[in-house]
Image (cartoon, rainbow, N blue to C red; front, top):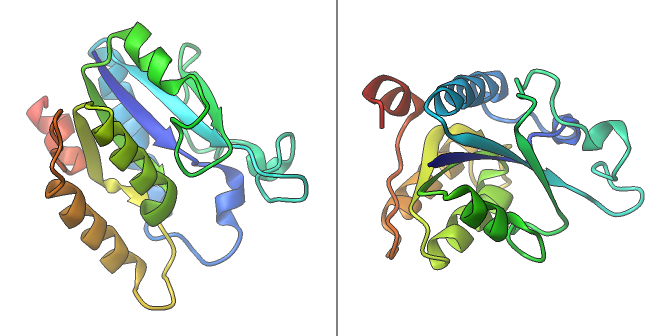
Length: 178
């Protein structure tokens, strides 16, 4: 079964600098979610829970998922407190129980939580498909957001991974039936 992870696409991400192609990323995540569910796969939303006073503090407006995201009633939610959504969460057990064969990884922020998700899934031996145009980040002081995204897509495609890593754009997954 295919499983798509949607990492930290929460209202709080709108604070601070603009996120690269945010509405385009949300649109691709929504389209992928529909396709994966239609093929019998599942979607898991990863929700960051920040400390008191943080823009992702549980129960605050920033903690909620972006209202533009299309969520289905049987989508799952896993709450995390670190960049790595596998750390001290039931994510790995949930994936095992679902019989996950491949993980499509999407979300925010490319160089923090999305990267941590990809790398941890790889070290756990899971086949991973980072969706090249379905993750976002802000410009960094030393690098524009687009370059951060391109850099991570290139790095992920070169990871030595027992389960395999294949970085693909959303259209290849949607149109190619990957």
